[in-house]
Length: 520
Ligand code: HEM
Image (tube, rainbow, N blue to C red; front, top):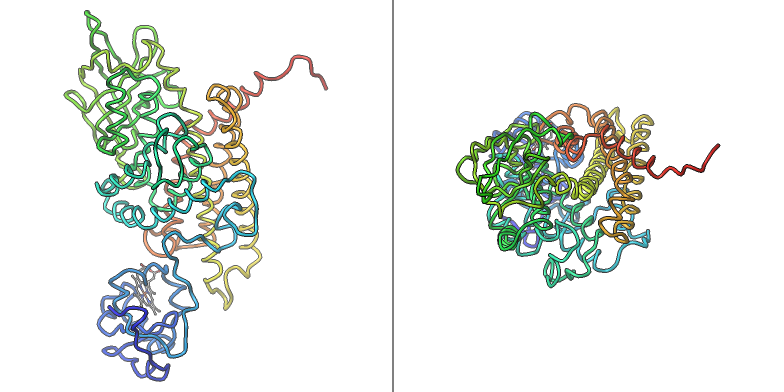
C-alpha cells in the first residue's frame, strides 16, 4: 500500500489517459486511484465509473455525493490509491481519531473554540479528549462490526474499558470511584462529578451503533446500583469487583410482558423457604437489555407484602431467549424465564417487600443518562445532515441553498441547543444536591427533560429523513446513521419511563410543591 509520504505524482494529463475498462484511473481529493481491477467489483457497478466525466477525471464532487468519506479510509479501498496529482493537496480533511468536529453545531458550545462555559473544568476537558480518542480508536471499529453481525462486544474491548474504569464511571459519582485513576489518570475518582459522567455518556454516542451501545453494559448501569446500594456483604463486594473488572456482566430484569412502567403490576413471584434461608423464583421478564450477555440479573419479584429485589446468577432454572428488536441483536435484548430458580437469602437486595424503593431509587439517574445520550444522538444527526446538505448537489446547487431545507435545520439546531443548555443546568443542580434532594427537587425536571428530548429526537429524525430522501431508508451507505436513528430513537422514548407517564410525573411533582396561599 502506498503511504502518503512516498506517493508517486502524476499530472492530470497522465491520469486522463487511463480512461477505459481495463485501464481505469480516477482522482478523488487530489489522490489518484487505479480502479482497473476494482471496477467489476464496485458496488455501484462498473458502468458509472466509465462515464466520461469520471474515467480519468477528477471525480471528487461526484464521489462525495455518493459515498461516505470512511469508504476511502477502509484498507481494501485505500490500497487502490497509487499516487497524487502533481501540485495538488487534499481539499477534504479526513478526520483523525479524537478530532473535534468543525461543522457548526456539530459539537456543544463548550467544545467550540469561540464559546465559554462556566460548567467545565480542565478535568472534564481532559476526560472528553481521552474518551473520544478511545471511542474512535477502540470502540468504533468493534461497534461497527458487531452492530452488523449482531454479536456482543469483543473480550478485548470489554477488558480495555474495564482497565480504564469505564464500568465504575458509568455508575456516576460515588465512593466506588475513590482511589481510582480513571482513563489513565486524567480524572481522579474523588473529583468525578455528574459533568464527567455526562461527558463520558455523550462521547460514547459516537460509536454510532445503538444496539451495540445498549449491549455494552447499559444493563449494568441500571442493574448494578441496587447491588452497590442495597447488596449484602460479602456477595456485594464480590459482584462489584467482577463487574468492574469486566469479567462478569449484569442486567436489570424488572419489566415483563405483564407490566412495564407500572412496576407494581409485576407477576414474577418469589416464595421464601420454610427455614427462611432461600427463595424460589418463578416468572418471566421481557425487553432485558444485555440479558443475553449477562451472568447476573437484578430481579424484581412479588413477595407476600409487596415487591422484593434479588440478585440472581445465571443458574439452574434461568433461561434467556433473544428478542429481535428494530436494532442489532448486539444489544442482547432478552426474554427471561425463571423456573423454580432458587437463590439464598444473602442474594436479597434491600428489605423484604421494600423492593419498590430499590427499583425507584435509581430511576432519576437512569433517565439522566438516557437524556445525555439522546441529546448527543440528536446533535450527531444535525452534524451528519449539515454535511449532507452542503455536499449534495440538486438542481445544480447544494441542497442547503433551498430555503425549505434551511428552515428544517433552524428547527433541528434550536432543539439540540436548547436541550444541551437545559441538560447542563440540570447536571449543575445534580452536582449540588444529595441523591435525596435530587429525588425531591429534580425528578420532575429530569422527567420533563427526557420527554422533551425524546419528542425532539422524533421530530429531528423526521426532518432528517426529508432532508436525506431515499438515503435515509437504507441500512448501509451515506444515510446509514439517519436510518439507525430512525430505528432506535424510540427506545429512549419508552425505556426508563414512557413519555406520557413521565410528563404526568413531572406535573404531579410540581403540584406537590404548589403553595396553598397563592391566588390569581
Ligand atoms: C476510489 C473509488 C471508489 C470506491 C472505493 C468506491 C466504493 C464504493 C462502495 C464501497 C460503494 C457501496 C456503498 C457505500 O458503502 O457507500 C459504492 C457505491 C456506489 N458508487 Fe462507488 N466507489 C468509488 C468511486 C466511485 C465513483 C467515481 C463513482 C461515480 C459515479 C461511484 C459511484 C457509485 C454509485 C452510484 C454507488 C451506489 C450508491 C448508492 O447505492 O447510493 N463510485 N462505491
